[in-house]
Amino acid sequence: MTVADDLPSDRRLSASGLARLLGSWQRPGPAYAALADGVRSAMHAGSLPLSTRLPSERELAEALGVSRTTTTAAYRTLRDEGFLVSRQGSGTVTTLPASGAQGVHAPVVVRPAQPDVADLSIAAPPAPSALHPAYVTALDALPRYLAGRGYEPLGLQVLREAIAARYTERGTPTTPDQVLVTSGAQHALNLLVHAHVGPGDRVVVEHPTYPHAIDTVRAAGGRPVPVPLSSGPSGGVDVDLLESTLRQVSPRLVYLIPDHHNPTGTTLDPAARERVRALARRHRTVVVGDEALTDLTLDGPEPAPFAGAGAGSGFVVSVGSASKTYWGGLRVGWIRAHPDLVSRLAVLRGHVDIASAVLEQLVTAELLARREEILPGRRTALRERRDRLVALLADQIPSWQVPVPAGGLSLWPDLGAPVASALTALAVRHGVRVLPGPAFAVDGGFERHLRLTFSEPLDVLENGVRGLAAAWAALGTPQDARRSAPVQAMV
Image (cartoon, rainbow, N blue to C red):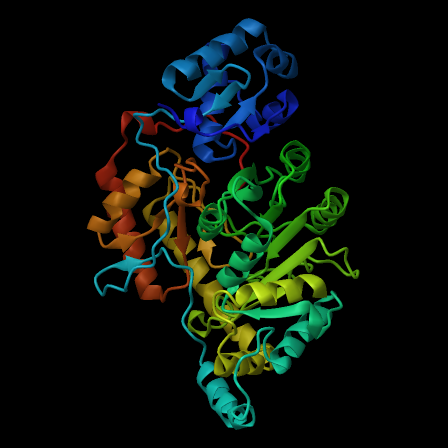
């Protein structure tokens, strides 16, 4: 049984859309074989998601300017290999071979640190030196809160004011009643999903995306619908495909990572942000922008605020966090939304944890007040680690294509062959832990990619690349790992 036998087709890709995705697919030899290679390569790269209904053979032939014989033979080849399945009433849908070694999405588990393993799978930098003084200051302020109950479902007023001031400073006027403090960005996303999504409801996500977002949607009974990232130079979600998907599936929620996208590192440009906001208003669909990595801009100016400069329509929601910018152990995040939604979420959170810890909220308020002192050094250290990791990969595994992100905490190298899951399993034996591309996919794909984080110290990065190089050499060049024809993908 194939994947597509179990999963409904949530979206349809037009002939012009598939032609644009394939780019320059032609190569010497039979045209049908080149076309089949292009489609297969797009699926391996993840730019063509699974469970996507493809255009008819006639429509694709017209869009590509080839004969229908060519498209018919290409589709037949892919069906025979298990990459396509045709179903009555649903057309031709992308899938993966049932017996293939392709990875599928599985929950990402944070494992305890091991001294003999270079762990490049977790995007979490150590605490800055300013964290301890911030705790000292917070402890001095704590006594004035001890007479109260300690339960503030919306968050401490001092922190909500600090968060609102930060949004206002960035160009999005915000008041404290538009802010809900949460126990991290993951908690914020969980609240938003459970407030909007029920069994069977669709949630649009970028492809690839943050693994825990996929898990959260499924835990609520929802169905994540993937939309590829743009093949253009700016990156970010493909807004044309996002618009068509909104029309086709009427999702209850859209989840995007507009800044230094996890895992690809791309950033949505200002014009695309405005289009996304317009789509949210037009379709009356809540669009969540996860800005947890915004402060970690390493090159160039900081991205424009996702919510924009206006008061907003209530359909654009921003999520932030102190975990990536300062320290994961703080477990403090926030939601910026319309006051009515903030109040609704505060009631919903009472089913889980009532309120966030007072001391950590005071620490976060202090860190936000001192961010201009803290962030330059933070960015310098991460920039050095990013550049070192890129240089190590270029030296020891030169066949990989490694785009350099302008911010964030990770790289998304293209291995040149669909072997990420096999390499990840082998790498552990060589003392390095990484995440394969399929961990960031809804139902498989991205077998040409790994996510490598650069938040670890330089010696850990060096040991990690040494282990990866050894694993890569041990993997060899299997027959199914031939470099495919170039596909216009998202990195």
